[in-house]
Length: 217
Length: 256
Image (cartoon, rainbow over all chains, first blue to last red; front, side):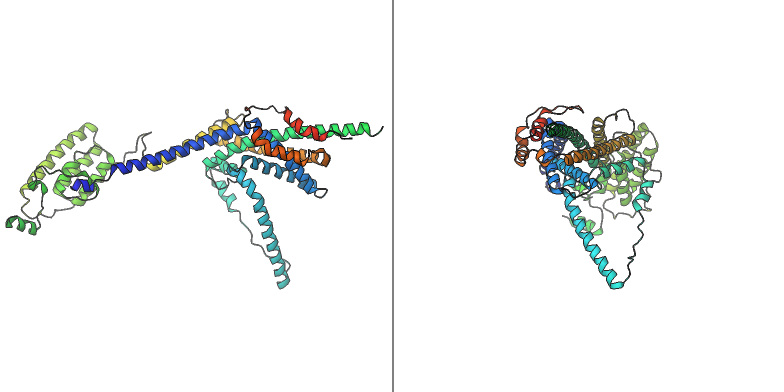
């Protein structure tokens, strides 16, 4: 009687533990499959083709939007941003770095709005007080001081997390996983962009040459 | 129930189930839930537990809390067991169990009288040596989690080593990370350079030079369906795929 009351129910516990194990196994298998697929995905011909066609369209849009205005540096920056955005769109937001690139544009817009508001406030304070100089607090960079104390491996891990977009505050295993996908994507991007640049330059020169041949006669 | 037995209970004597029911067995679940119904049975059972450091430590603490006559014996035995070798400890354990049985018999004889308070509480053993778990036998949840984390990191480092060229020759995690950082930076610089190159080509080319918007849109939409089943293959640096010629070449032909 007493033993039956006091003994815990083993059947229920075993069922729960087994379901948890199954769930964990499923999650692990899914993660492994995703990793393997991502590695294969960026090396595929199809993926490069998709990226190239999207990039071509993005370049056309950049050219149409920029027109004649804008300096050389800003134009190249615009092309680079477009290339990264297209790469993130090709990744379909499955990884952190792609989501970070896609959301970065919105963040920049938000920052611009904030900066404009701050400037307006500063102007108002200058008008009110009459002092043209606005006092600023001297910022001591604590991160630099801390980074000197860190061991070499952790310091390099932090540098790597800054290089991969959207991984600044992530733990090392996540950073490494994202870095593998990001490297594969960058390699594909370089291949596609170099092929596209070659073709565009060749076709542009050939069209210019043919125009030159025809025009004098 | 006779009045003598009732008087015994009222006096506050130790009431033992073993006297009433000779075949009474203590349930192990009762001890796990903290129901220490009979201290003698508990002592007797604890002596036959497997020789585990943690269980021994727990037993010492329990017996110190009870402070009986048998506890001092078992404490002495457990402290000796830590110092001596395994064979001696087994021998001592057998002796200790015999002594405990004798003490139990004495207590059963004197169970009618009121229990005497112990002369002095037994102190916990000072010469207790904490033995570290052997290599590969750390079963603590924290150590298991840490081991899993380390395995995950090493696995991903291997994957990165396969991706990054010339990284297999490097020994040490810090140097491998250095190589990875350099490679990512070089790729980013390449992208920057190529974007400048594309921008220059983009500036030179006329707007009519590009394929029409409709054409670009169709390639953009149909890309997922049309090229889904192609086999994977590596590219050389200089090779330019034929499909790209087909896409761009038509746009740049001169229309007179």
